[in-house]
Image (cartoon, rainbow, N blue to C red; front, side):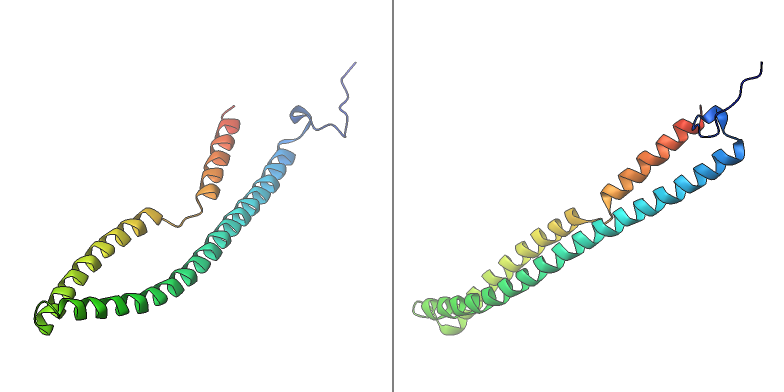
Length: 139
C-alpha cells in the first residue's frame, strides 16, 4: 500500500523543490529586511548619541574657552610683574601652543578609535546568517 502524504505537513521530504525554493526566497527576503531594519536602528541610535554628545561638547568648549581666556589674561598679567609685558605674552603663548598640540594629538587618537561607524552588530548578524545558510545548503 503506497504511503500518503499529509498535505499540512511541513516535513522537507513532503515538499516539492519549487515549494522549497519559494520558501527559501521568502525567508531570505524577510531576513534581509530584518537585517536592514537592525542596521538602520543601530545607526539611528549611534547618530542620536553622537549628536547629543557633540552639542554638549560644544557648549562645554565654549564656556571653557571664556574661562581659559580669562586665566590666560591673568597669567600674562601675573608674569608681567616679573618680566616685560611682551615677554610674558610670548611665554604664555608658547605654553598654550604646546598644550594645543598635545590636545590635538590625543583628539586624533580618540577619533581613530571611534571609527569605523559601521553597524557592527548588524554586520556580525549577517555574517552568522550567511554561514548558517551555507552550512544548511551544503547538507
